[in-house]
Every structure is written in structure tokens, then in C-alpha cells.
Image 1 (cartoon, rainbow, N blue to C red):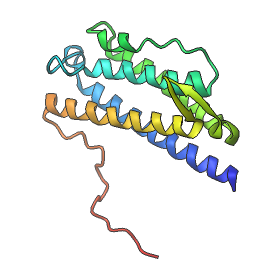
Image 2 (image 1 turned 90 degrees about the horizontal axis):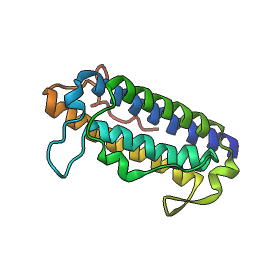
Image 3 (image 1 turned 45 degrees about the horizontal axis):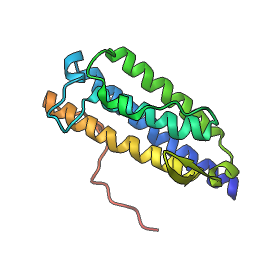
Image 4 (image 1 turned 90 degrees about the vertical axis):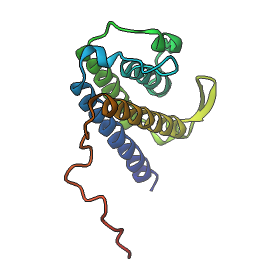
Length: 171
């Protein structure tokens, strides 16, 4: 039972993480370099900043904590970048970070998922860490999608071909 739960939990989170990675890549593909680093106002960061931030967060929570590697994150720097990484470099960074993280998640044991540890000053179990990364990535994917739609006035088609009005089946 525990093994099937662990497998179902980790594979479900990996599915969502990869889905959001594809959505971010789709948005980045539509943008030019200036749009990627566009800040709508002083209170908002660019899509480029959000990608760098997501990579820092994923490295700190999954790669460092669950992967037992050093935590070298400098969160403040993630938001100070105003230009410099190209679309290709950002996508490579995101893809590499997510590939490394999903491998670690897929190899995490039930014991490690239940073990508590401190990450970024928060006491979390491995389950809490994976949930945090999954929802944090989803949250910022939504911001990236919104910003892309604003810049391009275009439906991104994330659910193209899917009938979202389908009703639930009762048993």
C-alpha cells in the first residue's frame, strides 16, 4: 500500500511539474528577448525573473534538500537580473533544473517523503517539499501565461482539444 501511494503521489506531482514546464516553454517561445525581460511596473518582475526564481526555488527545495546537495541559492539575485539570459539559456536552465528535480522526486523513498527537515527556514516533510514545489511552479506558470497573453493578445491553447465542460461520472 505505501509503495503504491508513494508511486501515485510522486508520479502525479512529476506529471504536473512537467506539464507546467511545457506551458512555460510554450510562452517563452512566443516572446522576443525584450518581452521576456519586460517589467510591467516597479512592483512586478519579468518572465525571465520568474524562470530564474523558479529554478532557484526548485534547486533549494528539491535538488538541495531531497537530493542532499549544498544549498547555494541567493534568492534576492533572482529578482535583480534585468537582462542577459537568452530565451535558449532560460529554457535550458529550466529544463535541466526540472529534469534533475523530477529524477530526484521519482527516486525519493517513503521514509524520505515522511522525514522532516528545514528548507528556507520552514520545517517540512519531503511530502510538503514536493507539494510546495508543485504548487509554486503552478502559481508562477499562471503568472507567466497571464503576462504572455497580455503581451501577445493570444489564447495559449493549453486545453485545446479537451472538452472542459465534461461532467464528472458518478459511480
